[in-house]
Length: 124
Image (cartoon, rainbow, N blue to C red):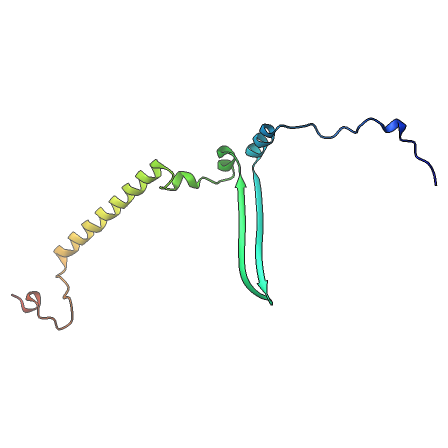
């Protein structure tokens, strides 16, 4: 068996440069990171439970570049989206009211039940 001489290898091998937590966080937010996984529980080849996990961690700018902007359209998170949703609901209610008022002028009122004895069906 040959003997190895380790005296010349006393110097440590240089690894990757040390990075602070702030540097790592900045890099993750700038580039984004996706964590995906599935948890599946089977019993005798019968699937009992499946949980699919998807996590995307990034800065707002990086998320927008990736096409993710749900926080801008969710009324629970954006005051502008809440105002837009309220405005759209009011417009829809106005359209339905106008349609209903226009329908009342053109068509006679519907009878509540067949055979019902009402003033509209008797012409009174």
